[in-house]
Amino acid sequence: MSPSVTTNGTGTGNANGVKKSHLGFGTRAIHVGSAPSKDTGAVIPAISLSTTYKQDAIGVHKGFEYSRSGNPNRDAFEATLASLESGGAHGLAFSSGSATTATVLQSLGPAAHIVSVNDVYGGTFRYMNRVAAENQGLETTFLDLETADDETIVASIRDNTKLIWIESPTNPTLRLIDIARIAGLAHSHPSHPLVLVDNTFLSPFYSSPLLLGADIVLHSLTKYVNGHSDVIMGALILPEHHAAVAEKLRFLQNAIGAVPSPYDCWLAQRGAKTLHLRMKAHGTNALAIAKFLERSPHVEDVIYPGLASHPRNDLAYTSLSPHARKFIDSLLLKESEDGGFPYGGMISFRIRGGEKEAEKFLTSTRIFTLAESLGGVESLAEHPARMTHGSIPEAERAILGIGGNLIRLSVGVEDVDDLIRDVEQALEIAVQ
Ligand SMILES: Cc1ncc(COP(=O)(O)O)c(C=O)c1O
Image 1 (cartoon, protein in one colour):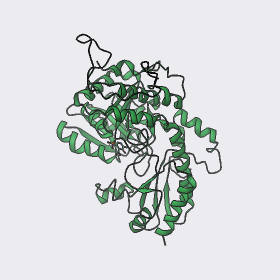
Image 2: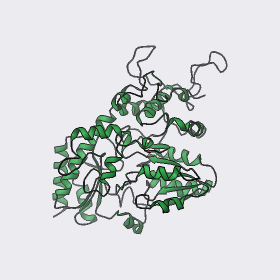
Image 3: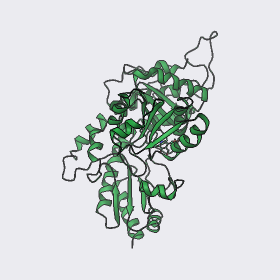
Image 4: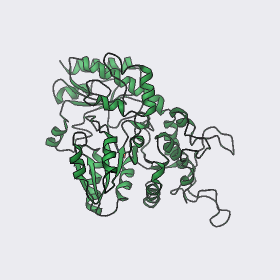
């Protein structure tokens, strides 16, 4: 038996005995799954690299047998994850976000059907279309879940529809999906598909999909949760009432074996302890930069869901996690003149001109680094059309709004004045 099953708390306690239900987000991030050692008193968990564990008699052990099935660091970090994702009770860690996706889709079995948001992360699209479709006969209906009306969504659900896959905001055009609406439609349908939300872009700080009715949350922990661009890892979090689904996924976690190392779990747990601090800083920095870009004559269009100009700015606010809402309300920004508020660290914008100007901007920044990925403390910038979304045919990219002048920023937690100056000088060089 995996010890994680017993220690991933149900809202009443977990690995370190800290009760989680009444604690704030930051307290949970720091203390749940991270108790001082009973053996040594060490305040920080030791890294337990052993792959196997002594048994006092056959089958008599301290909760661990073999490290793929469970180990102290993964167990502790899974407890942290289950606690951080509000409404969560079962946390499962994997060796990457992509391995997490593969495990979920494999769990659906042969000849299943799913409905997916149309501009899902490229690697997820690839796994659905090129791996699961070919190897297990998975059929996927890609739908624009932002604009599709209720009838269209309901009509897309078949007898064998097992899952609705949501990513919100979408990448890179940051469109917002109404998770509560989709969950309502799914749960009142006779086929009862589960609703999965890839919450990578907002992290458990800004969005709590389980509280909006989702059944499963997925993260590429590689991004904000670890937050330091030095670990590849993924996770699933499920609510208490989905113990049977969690158990099936945990069986596959062990059977497939795409598990993270104890060292990576330890690193990511360390990263997660500052998630609330980092996400507040990512959000306030991104809001300031988005506002600066909106005022710039060198910019055609800025996409940031926290800006009042974003078409779904109201949904962004009403679907905030309780802890993000508390933070944002304390800033008194929503009621201010321009109504903007922090909403994660991702911004996309269209520079005036075309691909030439975009490339010039991307090679002229001094603090923003030209690189793929996102969610680390350092600011990154990239060109979706030729980098992260380069494998999408140009015609489809055009439909999705991914043109040559689109730039995506992952705003880090450096001093905001330096970031704004950096963007300003790069725009001056790029747009003559
Ligand atoms: C939204 C989203 N989901 C899943 C993944 C896959 O995660 P990983 O790179 O950890 O395999 C990514 C990676 O960029 C992503 O952006």
